[in-house]
Length: 463
Figure 1: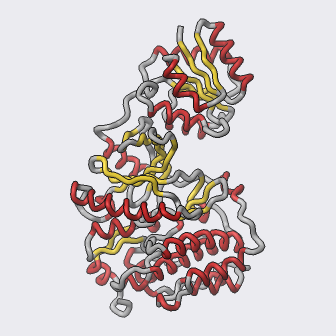
Figure 2: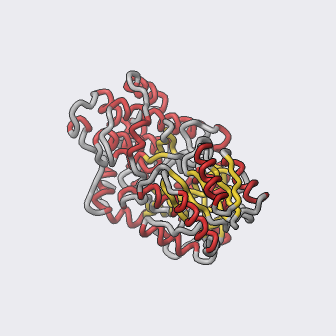
Figure 3: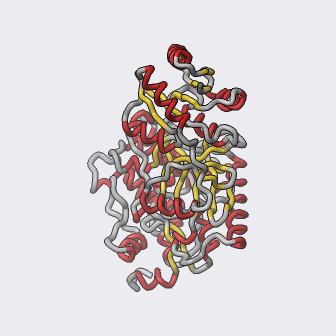
């Protein structure tokens, strides 16, 4: 006889499952409250758990994370039940850490057979510990994630949700605060720093600066800025823990559909409000790009990764410039410091791509791309797409003015975008059909560039 906990928000399903299990000689405990899953599983010393994937409030995926993070329940075999029978949902559930998946409606005999097999089989494997760096490296290269969870600091990483030049972004469970978070790992050796990895000294500097930036951001808790919860170093893995946004990045969006001028203005408003608030607190982003703008399914638009660029560049030394080629302010490419005007330039490049669907600057090589970036003379958006309002066209070009003093202030930008967005309400419903990209193209990856190499790569007339 097996002892089984069943969690489902549909009472009729619970009754059916309980009856089927009881008839077949098993003991069942049932609940419609996913928050009771862990305490009930511990109290009744169950042998397996059956979870509905879609439940209001706390989903089956989050309940799975809670079970896997508890020392008593982390090895329990878990069977997902779901009306979402597509292979994509099934694969997501299994990758998240479930042991089996059964689509509704189901036959009672099949349910019992699957539970019995799970209870007889070996329990869920231990989280990866010794080869975490290699697994993260493989995820960075392939965009795929091993089915086993990874413990990083106090967090349990359970799913890959993104990757880029700095490392991978993982969905993780915080057992202390009982919530899902986004955990971003940072691999300094991936940024052109040769053999430099996070050591005791560089790790201390890295963490101290991240904590300072995170504390500064936390003080104003802006609705257009992704919250930073924690930062740390575990072995050679540096990580930042942030608010989890269920949705897609702006990079996903501009790669999938053409935006209206009103939508572009709404996105621009969210970004410039985030920048204005950060600048008022003496925080500069330094790497504003579509991949760092997140759009949630519930309608929020937020900017992420404040302070990371400054942190990485400070670890790299004075002769390195950190940023994304094609989004670098021209003045920084000739050795001038990055200030608030640099963020304004990057905002212009972002909005240009939102309007036209293509980068403002391009090139077959890094040298060619940087040369276009430095010249800062993009083709006007109105020449690439019909129907672009003159006011939006002119604003974007003003944001990308070669000289910082020619760029408008955040207050002026917000006022102009408010006029352009006045007839458009942001509706995030169209985001649900989009898929989040697992990796970023090379042109979107932040890089460290040596000043000497940069000067040698560009035509003398431009430097």
